[in-house]
Image (cartoon, rainbow, N blue to C red; front, side):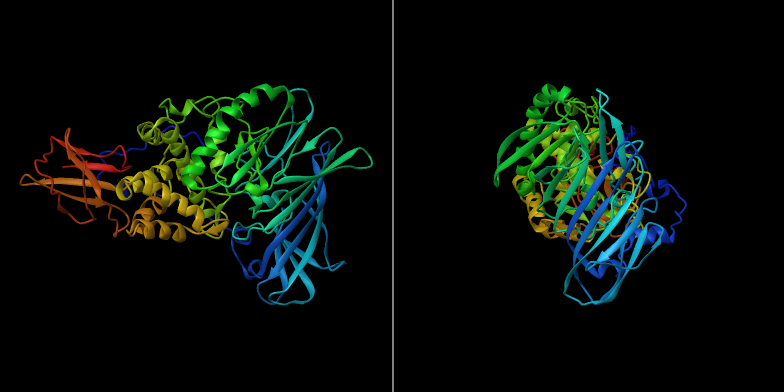
Amino acid sequence: MRSFLLLLWLGLLVGLSNPAAAQLLQAKPAFTRADSLRGALTPLRTCYDLNYYHLDVRLDIGKKALSGSNLFGFTATQDFSRLQFDLFANLKVEKVEYQGKSVPFTREANAVFVTFPEPIRKGSRAAFTVFYSGQPTEAKHAPWDGGLVFTQDSKGKPWVASACQGVGASIWWPTKDHQADEVDSMLISVTVPKGLKDISNGRLRKTTALTGGATRFDWFVSNPINNYDVALNVGDYTHFADEYAGEKGKLTLDYWVLPENLSKAKTQFAANVKPMLKSLESWFGPYPFYEDGYKLVEAPHLGMEHQSAVAYGNKYQNGYLGKDRSATGWGLKWDFIIIHESGHEWFGNNITSKDIADMWIHESFTTYSEALFVESQFGKQAAQQYIRGQRRNIQNDAPIIGPYEVNREGSSDMYDKGSNVLNLIRTAYVPDDARWRELLRGLSRTFYHQTVTTPQVVGYLSQQTGYNLTPIFDQYLRYASLPTLEIRFEEGKPVGRWIANVPEFNLPIRLRTKGGEYHTLPLTTSFQPLNLPGLTRENLEVDTENYYIGVLVE
């Protein structure tokens, strides 16, 4: 959600003769060693596999500071005596403890290197604890920038929240800050001033009143969790609850909102949450975190997909802050933040990309889930209109896949362009709706609670459809420009080809004579006959409603 922008630009490029030439020429970004330390899986990171965290922090709201510790429980994947964890340089590492004793460490940029007194052997389980303190980066425009939000509610009471997707969790707590290694379970302990509550991920295990007037909240997450999802939400919250009879049984629904918004929250959440769960469970399979429950937590920013504790800041209205991103009317019939951010429970939280460069796996499928929700509520024609409406936000400015191993995501087109690509795959290769549903559900089963790469996801889709989809995804994900359908009439006979950056690009196209039925014809980057009787330049119709492409007719 972090880089999600309202980009009001019509993306359907009809008439482009050469999309490769239209691709913007951009200077290669210069990456530093700090970028590599943050984004690369070096041996100092892969030598240990995370099993368990215990994050224990105390919040000093007046000073906008925090202090505490994080225990790293891990299994050694090889013999080693040195490893890396991550913590932003503006936060101080007080000490690192191993087996009850302090061990030496050094820092470079936002990376911390720990040296152990003797080698830790492959296969052994061990733990170390990092003690730290300081003033974390304050997010000024969350969720688009990262850090902690320090603000007040309408009654002047403190209201604090975390939002750190992209920049990384190490902006406020010590962690192995790479998506490829998710911890198996986690205890989150947050101590806050008396009168306030902390709402974090998972289930509340214990609330403890401490001397001096503070309160400690212990939340336990029993499922794997990526570290940017780990959240604190501190405020004067009130609570109400419900439950949902889902595919895996009873799912608890817990809602934490500011007291003055209780009535609005009850109405808005009742109208959206259960229909969302019914729809997305139908399309993607069971909600992936029954053991940890489902929560919506009111936040002082727009929203974020914090696992089992979705941050909500859409002001209890339908649409995206009251607007329809698709400009079709369908986007005003439901609450965008509830549907979109909850969709990330399946894509982003259940299935997580190993490298942030592949974040399209999170955002394309989740943006497409909006259309699937529309389909389940209002029918397939409404969903197709909504998907076409998403194109107005596409820029075609840069590749959707970013550079690997430097913690950089690609173009924000991963949202709406990615959604249109998935709809194209459905149209061209899986027109049977029941089969398409089973393919999506199978994706959740196959990669359940896993971190994945683009080749894994595209390989699954290729295997399920029976077609090599790699050239298609390569064109849409690795190049900014659209493939263009070029049709010529040579001596009255139509021939066609694809103009694309990927030489092996081959995509069947749907054509018809005006008013007739669509026919699906195979097409590659070489000219070949279009065997459709009666087709002329005047009566040719291309399915640009379901195909996000350029078209050139000569």
